[in-house]
Amino acid sequence: METMKAVVKTKPEFGAELQDKPIPKPQPDWLIVKVRATSICGTDVHIYKWDPWSADRIGAKALPQILGHEVAGEVVEVGSSCKRIKVGDYISAETHIYDPGDLTSMLGAFHVGKNMKILGVDYDGCFAEYFALPESICWPNDKSIPSVIASIQEPLGNACYAVLGEDADVAGKSMVITGDGPISLFAIGVARVCGVAKIIHLGKYDFNMEIARKMGADLQLYTNQTTAQERLEFVMDHTGGDGVDIALEMVGSQDSINDCFAMVRKAGRLTAFGIAPESPVPVDYNNGIVFKGCQIHGINGRKIFDTWYRNRNLLASCRLDPTPVITNIFPLSEFATGFEKMLERPRKSAKVVLFPDKAEYEAAAKFMKE
Ligand code: ZN
Image (cartoon, rainbow, N blue to C red; front, side, top):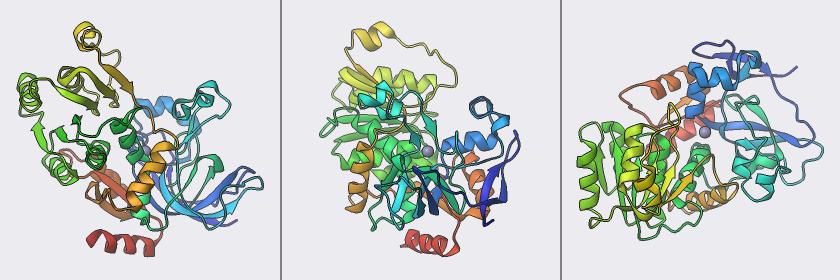
């Protein structure tokens, strides 16, 4: 049996191990991809730490399991009933394996479909030399996009969906974006290229605040150095006293949720992306939503495949440059260092990308230097 290196969650506790595993074989409507680049997601960090969410969502019984879901790679084998994707194709993966027969999917909202399964959560993931995935979730990449960038399109899709909402009506508008994480930083870049006229970023870590400026934040506030009242006054001062057209809540903390409800103008849009550590969360229902007449937009995943299509075009045209957010790259064997970077507080990293292949890693290192 042919084997490969893979990062495996073996025990229901902190950490993971690099192991030799059999190279997977495809089911009829699945295919096998040789991984060129794979990035670490917040979800992987939850599983790596084995926090209550992952203990509940995955459970010790599912172990051992290979981590990872954000990827760019080359198709090396296709199952007997695959039609659209061919051997040699350069692909990334929508990680939500939707059920096309469920009502939500049939009505076009594939990303929140009922019997949703997730790559690297419900199935073995892509922190490996090879991995298997259904043809239905393959997204063909533009060949000009380097693998280090193609691997981060999945979280970039979250950012794209959060910024554009359902109507993509953002050009010339003002936007608050909260948080220091990679998706907040990507969202700033997407907002910039999509013509948002004023981007106000609320963060707290120097390292990430600087990345936010590189991505196009116009104004910034440190949430750990200001009061809620000071933040609100600042936003009102910069929006003619009306508040912002759109507020992206990307932290999930009570303070950030309060900020967004207070800062969004009447008849504006509040996008809820951050996950609160505990729910329900109190909000000012009457003044914050009803009398304000604002739209509340929940984001779970990416709009399949609308955000993939837009991001591929934005990346291939080089209109959108996500490289400032990619702060660290490592060979796959150094995955533990990658997770350490992700867990470090105060934050001194954003996106970390891993490479199973040495030549691919060296090419990415060269590209990131240029
Ligand atoms: Zn992800």
